[in-house]
Length: 300
Image (cartoon, rainbow, N blue to C red; front, side, top):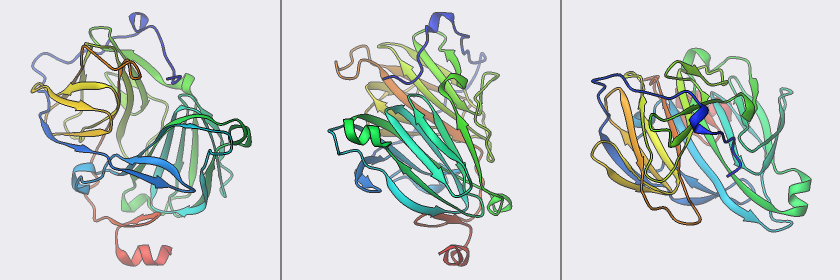
């Protein structure tokens, strides 16, 4: 897994305050598999979860993990968006993005592209020709972050976040690497500038390691298991690859990696996210996320 790595023993440690209340587990769901764009495989991480539990998030796809043969890599054709932000994070592989607002470029291991669709944008996501010719490993995520009504008509914008800019932290026991992509954790800020207050983290836990993360009470808390086996909450409910944990109220998140992991997934990999709910009506159809059906129809 080439996403940025570091020696956790040299990194700042994350602690929770004495008396912090661990969040209990509300539900654990399984992400069904599907195909997106021109036919690349995805797991729908938020499937089966009420949108009120996800707010301010709308949609999350785990793209891959897939080993392409030469000629197989696929992307998406040109398509529009309005009313939200797309966050594309690449763990393995390489991806190109271009949009009609002049944003775009190439991202690879640990990089992130953050596109604010706002009032409207056209973009394309595709593997570069070199990857199509050679084939290779591809693995990443795309997250949709809603915008409040007051910002849905803002001008489109684009952020290119390099892996080297991500804030790197370690768990209290030193057994987990915590990459802060956006938002803040224990006073350490990620490079992503967010329209809606959120925190976005990619964490790698060695076998037996535990993370106890301080988490804002006014944020929701979601943990998606990318790979490996572990336990969530103080109640130690088991989770595995392709499962989403929705946490309840509290001010800390607890996850522990199982002592024994599979050879193909030697660590527990997690995508951890939370944000301040917008609490506005959501009208979502295809590539448009607005507040009313009329606004969606207008977008079409």
